[in-house]
Image (cartoon, rainbow, N blue to C red; front, side, top):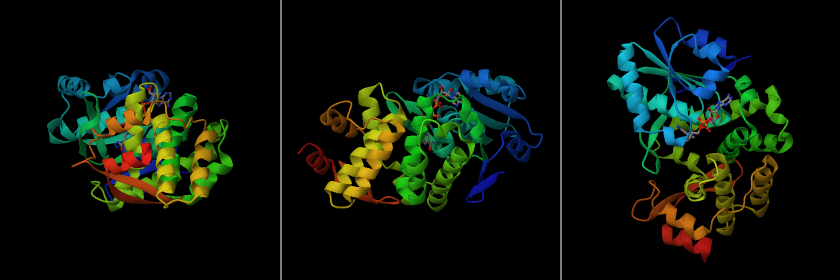
Length: 339
Ligand SMILES: NC(=O)c1ccc[n+]([C@@H]2O[C@H](COP(=O)([O-])OP(=O)(O)OC[C@H]3O[C@@H](n4cnc5c(N)ncnc54)[C@H](O)[C@@H]3O)[C@@H](O)[C@H]2O)c1
């Protein structure tokens, strides 16, 4: 069974079998696939159907050097504005593909086959594309919607457990932002075994994608409500950068816990909801302890790109399923965190 969600009538998110999705969205046009070596090794039966370009792994490959290399290879292949780019992989591959597609020859048609949990519930959806510059994540990018996103939970069978957990941090985030029932479902069903249960993962991917798609549909360019999707991320990014050992999801999990505690201290979130958030994160397998002193994290946050004039837009949960954006001086935040 497949389900399609739509964003502004221009981006369709298909949750179902990959081959059914390919038949639906690709109709004989010239396709160039962008992927990484892991995905090529595991899923060459799909990649090998198309001309393809392989990019490197990890955040250190999500940069303008990789984009430049893809532009050059596209030129060598004779790609033109009638070519469709198809990113097959996790969030790194889809972020780069979207960036290249929306800039090469001023914009090609593009779509994704999203293969990681983080990609299926978050990164592939919503049209934010970009690459890192120097030490700054997603510093250069575009808003451009993929024509389609295909998410097949069968891909998750080959995803390492650490990557599955990383995706789960974003699932917890969207459930706190906008789906209390999904949060309760996670409380009931989460275990290391649930990642292999197709029906459980399908519901998790679909419900998370629906929350994100609804929000993006209302605010495509992140001028207002879409900012709630940054819940836990301002602190999370700073933790990721300071610790250098944690992946994105592990850092976001700590960010979610910290921001829930802050919201409770400010009188906005009940103790019960704060404890439910910590308990769920720990049951998934996350540590919610700070890996480095808070003073280091706050120093890093000063450089966050969402900050202007020392004012941060902080997303605070007011209950599970609802958040509010509050403007806070960095000094105020420092007072709450380190007294
Ligand atoms: N554009 C957005 O709105 C948005 C939102 C959230 C995150 N992101 C970005 O997403 C990126 C992280 O994405 P990610 O966690 O998917 O990382 P990733 O793309 O690096 O994938 C994680 C690892 O898993 C491998 N992998 C992917 N699918 C697999 C599968 N089915 N089987 C086996 N291995 C597989 C990849 O090769 C990679 O080594 C970050 O750069 C982040 O900034 C973007």
